[in-house]
Length: 143
Image 1 (tube, helix red, strand yellow):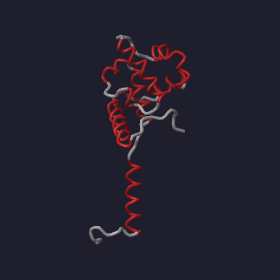
Image 2 (cartoon, rainbow, N blue to C red):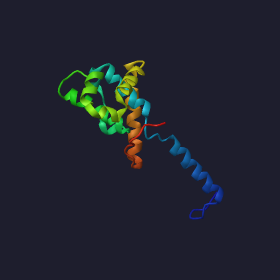
Image 3 (tube, rainbow, N blue to C red):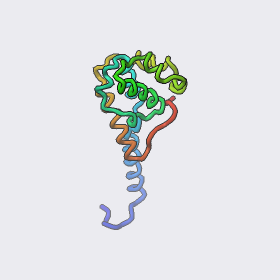
Image 4 (cartoon, rainbow, N blue to C red):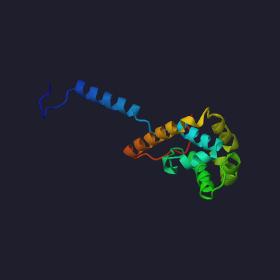
């Protein structure tokens, strides 16, 4: 056992670094799938928007933030939210988010909207992790 105030040995230093690395690998700062599932769920059932806990700031990917924005605008105007409405509200920005095809793929990938709250929880957890390390977003999708 090391005495208080003594210098760490090389082995102790390496062990400490390994523990830090393992901890950092567990800390997820984004959850692409959950973001897509939340947005896809709302595209499938626009009434779910009013039940969302997540806000624009909780999305990591800029494209997903841009998709969330027209959903929010439509909800604020008490309008129906679906693929067509989101596409219309996005206008020319639809190209920046992957096109209508991407919106459709998000909606098609939702097996059930019943697990929406789970995906929101995963997004919020990733958001808290980003806030902890001071990382806010990324402009591109993962490979």
